[in-house]
Image (cartoon, rainbow, N blue to C red; front, side, top):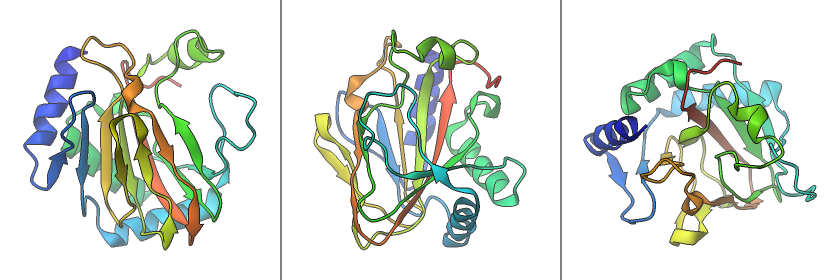
Length: 211
């Protein structure tokens, strides 16, 4: 996986408008205007049509840990096809390694408390979620709209916070250089104080997606 990591980092670093966040403990990038407003609006419509309460892989007893709504997007929808094409062009990762795109909506007071995207080794659902396609490698997240107040994404361990903007992309490697999970990717989808927040998330795996 070292070769893939280096390839993605090099590719992203060479794209106009993509900025690497300067921190030695994480490979984290951002890009404003990554996707166009029209595509953002189309994806928001899809999320609103099929959203459902969000869940987490390993229940931790906190019923308010993740209070957003989620939508599993249809890979055959025109807007999703366009989005996947933009992501593939940007990261160069074989599309077969990608999970289906997922949309999330956060209403006032909703959040996703500090968490990591990788599956915790030894966790209750680690074997279930990693047995077929392996661990998560990269996360690509796109904000679809600005938020009137709140709704930032905070990486507490590295002291970085990102505000929602239409079409803004964040992406990060969930692993360290040796391939082990990187706890510095801990991030918090902070509470929306006013308005609503829509995002798209695309995760990639070590092996082709086989579910």
